[in-house]
Length: 88
Image 1 (cartoon, rainbow, N blue to C red):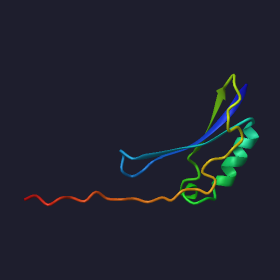
Image 2 (tube, one colour):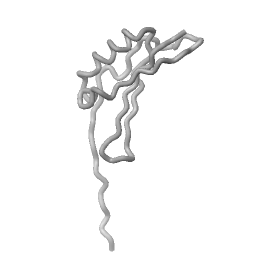
Image 3 (cartoon, rainbow, N blue to C red):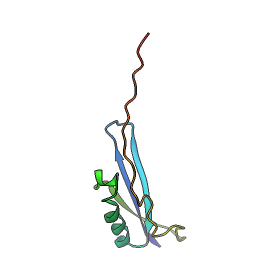
């Protein structure tokens, strides 16, 4: 059976930090795109709405959470800076 896996990925300004979110697995490309359109306006996702990706996958067993969207409320985005310790 063919399914469509949606994920969200971006790299921050600090090259060593990246964010990867599994959004869900859907039984049609239409449902996958509907989930993306809904999430584009949510907190966190709205900052980079072009970072959603759809991957076509084959599974012989039906996924447990088929057509369920995770991160439906979005996410909080924050940055931090490492403190430099003064040399003694």
